[in-house]
Image 1: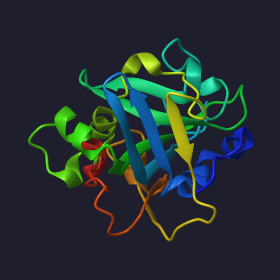
Image 2: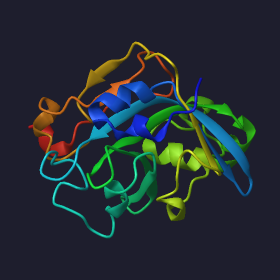
Image 3: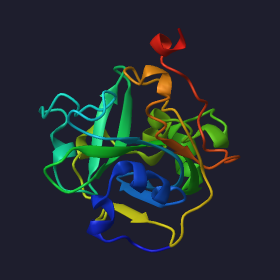
Image 4: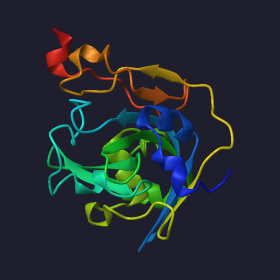
Length: 202
């Protein structure tokens, strides 16, 4: 495992996402630290390129972090209940990111269990909302540098064998065929169930 340089995140998210599979992300919250191993990610390009991206129509107060320094955390609230976590990609001034969809807890298991009582270990970080709760990352830390405390990120020195396919539940993807930008480790327990967007099921 190695700590990436800032320039590592400056690449196209479609290339970056598979390189992040197997990476270990940790967060030191006030109640303790949990680390996860990333097993599923989705790539999102930016303005005018990707209708599934929050940045597709331009910069807003909500998505401003996507236009900033790569390697930072873009966090947003989904469905009024879930915090979703993204890694900003491409050079500052552009607008891309990688959504962390699924992971396995590798350190701090007891703390993750307390944060998600009654949940099977395989489900602790299996899905974007579950992932943020297991880590203990609140919406308020959006914009933080993932290469500095209270975060730590280590990547593998060689990419892992992975699968690719349509993103999960994304409107505007046209059924997903044009955007096969979901990347996952086959057979890994941290991979979430795939769900198409309801409009894409026609």
